[in-house]
Length: 336
Image (cartoon, rainbow, N blue to C red; front, side, top):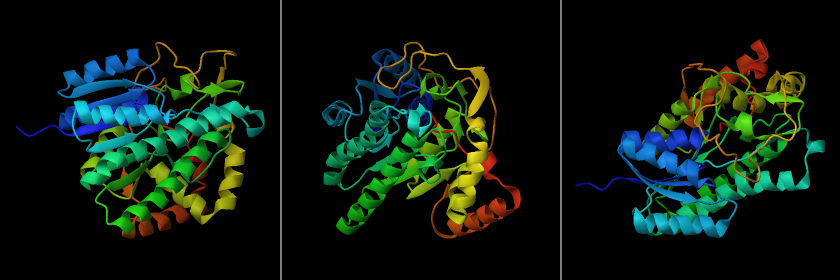
């Protein structure tokens, strides 16, 4: 009997990470290492994975702890087998103007979203490189290219991990490595992050533009694992934001200044002092979807390379010049 593929997913307790884990269980029958801070939430995801035909190993830890991440990779290899796919998804964010961010908040977003991903990549490579095979999938965001107001810390961390991966790719090519690295840039997604992220704003946060569901992202990530590409943009809005800012960055700055502050806020007042997940988990909120209804939009996968990029660039330029699409495409943040 063929051995089930082994997958590791960080940030697996809720939102996109949870959807990714369940998609690998349903479609591959995979054995999955589940990483996040809340054991209670991971136990619940593990039961869902097993119900869908997969196997689960619960690994409660903070990805900002590099020793814990490496230890988790070692344990997955011992108990489930050689890691075929490592998915970096864990993140945290803070909504607020740069002038209002506390140093420890800025540091924490960087440690989880950037360094946590870098540590995960190193842990995966330590095992994959010797076998000369395996795939690392980094969950990114259009915000890795087009930063927006109120999320400077998160945007900076996503841009940083994109730079880290670009450098790594050249190293792997130089070494003739068979390990694949793919970064998936996301659009706005309906996840609990808008309920539990820390905020310094007077009104509750919301995503902007077309909102996709976590399950759509989960299935798309499985497709990327089946056919790894250098970079994949999910959704036309992500493509437009990335290429639009490349074509007319100054226009993008001004358009987002006019639209993306109010556009990320609902009319509901924020509750001062509410629990947030920046430093600690928030009990009882580890679910897949957020509170923004059930919109269904077609999710298009676009490669960032070759003819697809050229065609997309032309379309992006036309949209910027003719439609002012950035107000529509500006993304309030992850995913999660």
